[in-house]
Length: 251
Length: 291
Image (tube, rainbow over all chains, first blue to last red; front, side, top):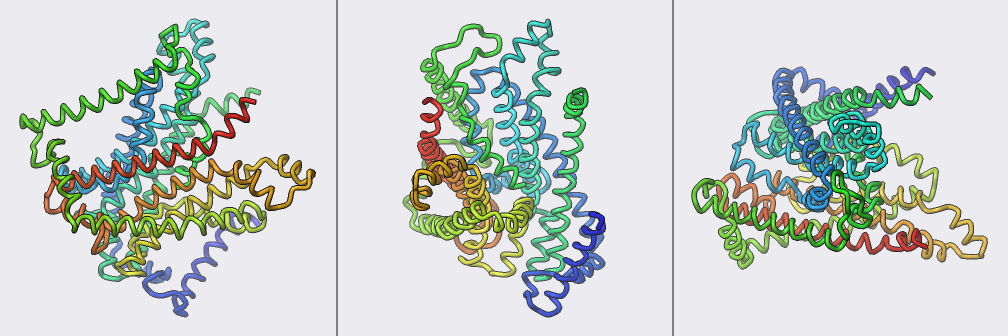
């Protein structure tokens, strides 16, 4: 059987199973929402969810962009200058263990409960893994590449952009993956805690009303946000690792 | 996405401060400094930077550049902290939170270790459960917190279950990975010499798995703490999280800052302590490489 048809059949089977579980009351109404309940919620409050989705997506995109830029900049600078790397590396790793969620109330005090506090919180959440991984990626670089590029007469800029950056890309991308995931979760969780709008806010709102259908609809939208962010990251990765495919095809 | 964070487990195999153990010429400087001198300089710079930061912060709030209503000075934070440590109500909330964290870990970790071990040892079990685990790891667990509240209500059980799920998946996956990494050749050799199963587990499996399992436990604890605190902030009657949110909404910034700093310091200390243990447990590897 063609994999596509198989996958579609599996998904349909899963949806039917979920529907049956709820119809036969094998799983409680608060634990699971049947697909028909979710569809009902969509018809009822689709517009509300869509505008919230837009807001959350905007916050996520801002947070991701800022955390990527900050993280890569800090990681690159500290990675290239060995002393700075030795100083900041352990500090960054130690700070990474801190439960950043505990800083969110402070962020609410400083930035209010609008989008700014969420973006700030998500930026910090995403910053650490990006910076740490960029730092380690550059530190782990084989010095022979540096010597080699200097020996063929590369300028500093050429060495950085044509040799070092492509070589450190796997680590940087790994850091970007973790950072993006944390940033997306950060925005949604922050919205759940204290917000005027957004997907997290809607999830909480409908939870207080005990409408599981709406709650799961919100969760699905949240997952959609994560998927969009992931898709963007994959596009970036594909753009920047094209040299890899060239390398392999030339063999 | 948690799978990506679990990727940190793989990175734990590379010594993080490799630059200090095997110093290489930094870009632009030709002669390397002696490693001990480097270490001292680095430490001094870190301490110096910290002192500058705190000092600058103190000055800024004293002189009014930063509004002390929004960001209290370090001295205020310290005094408030000392105050809070003597406050019985605060200590009660702390005990609540710590109790939940410990309970979730003590219940979740052994189960996860057992499941992870079985998944690694038994290929069929591994094949059936692994896709499920990866699916769960790919989904950010925090998003399901409202469902936990819907099902379990507010209270100890809800937070306990939330914490357990956080601990479980990380520890199970890293344990499974650790079991898979045990060098099969050694096991065969041990069996050839007539070692019983228990002996093999004790002498080969345990040391080989220990570092990765420790990393998994450390990450599990971190996720556990994050999960419990999040659950407390989201919907709870008692606990540190509730205090933080309440103080935040009430603009009681000094207590908020003091508590936040306390939690951050505590988690950093715990993380570093576990990391030292991790390094200690992985020392047999360094000596094996050296010989």
